[in-house]
Length: 247
Length: 297
Image (cartoon, rainbow over all chains, first blue to last red):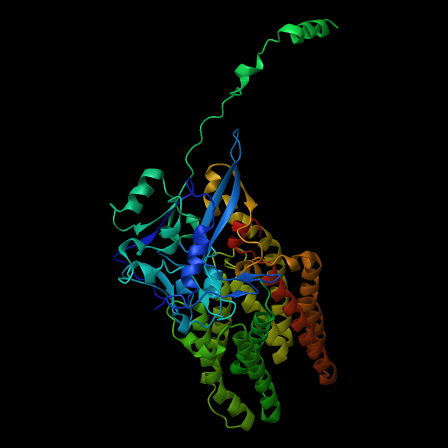
């Protein structure tokens, strides 16, 4: 089971647009909200001490914020959502000793069979992206399922059959689709916007792609208020200006 | 990485135990009677206590048997197989030594090979992880194997082999301490490559994604214990190799067993503490690339 499929019919994944993401954390909340019900693919996502002094818990999606300082231009603040990239060569799958971790041949989604997980944590060690977190009370590994319990769920209205994070994103920074299809929305976006892989050197071949922030305008040298700076004082102020200027 | 006591006990004791069992399997020494019972018993006890300690690391130890299923891809699963196979194959030899049955030692040789293979599979669990550059290096299996060889030789009472093994181990340990420092940087992964934002400029953390530490930070970003590294390294080196090597030299050059035996015991105890210290450093110093997302190592 932990042998990776040589070919997957679909390559489902996300495109995350770092240009439009505002770091509102709505995807984090929607993900937690959908997956902590314990009725779908993820059997709950628990927290410890949620209202106490040291709250902690398992999340499948985290949004970081970075400052990027380009050379000779003002610094940029970039919100950066991080979740499972559903890698083609997923190292988390092959290290699993029990077969609990697997990659589906039909759509490439990487999942955990929680009833077979021994909670050794080796898959989380093998993942470069920090996509897996151990559930603090169930002691089994949790990860993004690409909302496999939504995208094929015929009980949901059609517009809801996409991952909770994508459905909720208020700025449309997250896109869901099939990378195996060159005409899909995600393939086109990746091509037109220069979508890239995270840490490609590690050979994981992630499905998810990140779209870089668009280039900013050149900084304007003069202030837009400069026209207002050249004000000639008149009247009493003008006389005072003239007199004081002499000393 | 988090230096969990269960994993330290597991790798140190099982390495020592399988090292001793390999020597016994090959017939160095070939004890008999109750001495054989105690000697083989020590090997089995160390190996089994080590393996049991590893199950303490699991969230669901009751499902541990499932870990035998994925030997085709998983080094952890392969380790489960080789360790059990070694313990089973060596049992007739142990029984034969104890009860003087005179059975052929062929399974002892195969069992010894499986002991070596077990230590190798243990080392590969760590060496395979591209996410931890300090471990993902060809020297990790030699490090574990030289610990098993040196420690096994001490427990097996092999003074000369042990002395040479200790010298080899000291070299491997010292070199991995020094070279390990540069391995993360050599891979060239930064917060810039982790986020891909390095193509725009210099990337620094502006705000963390959560206020309390999470599983990733507790497990992969262990910075607390790294303060005393400079002191712990020489302590580990001296206790694991120098003191045992001196004891073994003494034991090798004396013909009086009343002197040799306490020297072997002292060498073993010193080596055990040194190996534990080295293993603690092995985990505590290892830096996972996921730390880059948090601006930490």
